[in-house]
Length: 314
Image (tube, rainbow, N blue to C red; front, side, top):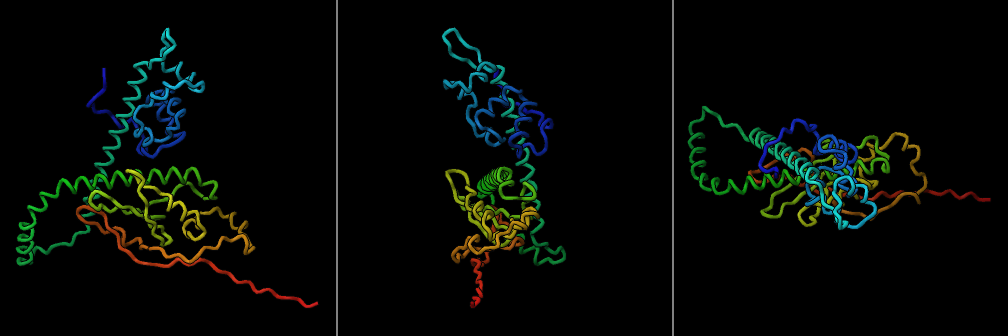
């Protein structure tokens, strides 16, 4: 019996479940679905909620003849007389339940984000004076003239908002995973960057080709590239790993200052580069179908140090 079109109680899931990865993710899978299911996902490198939701069939790997999978096969499969393996229906149903539960949780969070997006948009709209009769009449005429256009664009606007929220969640989760994996190598005091404090993410709906950029709190704006249907954060990773990122310098562990290189040869000097900088306060302006950002241009110049060498005459 297939589980289809059912509503599940997502309250059994932690509030931040969509951001879980590695041990937190596997512990959640073990608690909701079972230990065998958690081992199956771990063997495939499926270590986060969105990786799991993006995998078409988690049991497909069991069709491969591989000694590393023998223990898992004995757990979740029945071995036929002809030495073929068949997945036990209970494990398949358990995985399907976990998938639909997490997918429903994702949809619920999207709805909450849509409401917040509309509320923020309304709060930024200018207030119309109730005592100004002429202004009210002009506004009514404008609304009447634009009503047909607004009705025709409702579907497009809703789709754009949904796409922006999907991209937003995906980018934030990818960034959190990367920071968690690299925080020790980068000597960070903590393993998380805070949105709207350490960086600002802006997604612009440009018809069928959305664009995304991240403005670091140090003032540097990084444009994200598209890889198929998703955005790549490689450009932003390069920026925060560079010595020019003031935001990351502040997050370094204090003892790291003692190891600061004293020799000119230990500094990596870069050529003068021009980058776009965006004020954090300018990134919150929105429109009916997109999130827009203000642009300012700044120049990040490489550090140049000159050392005077005194020559001692013998």
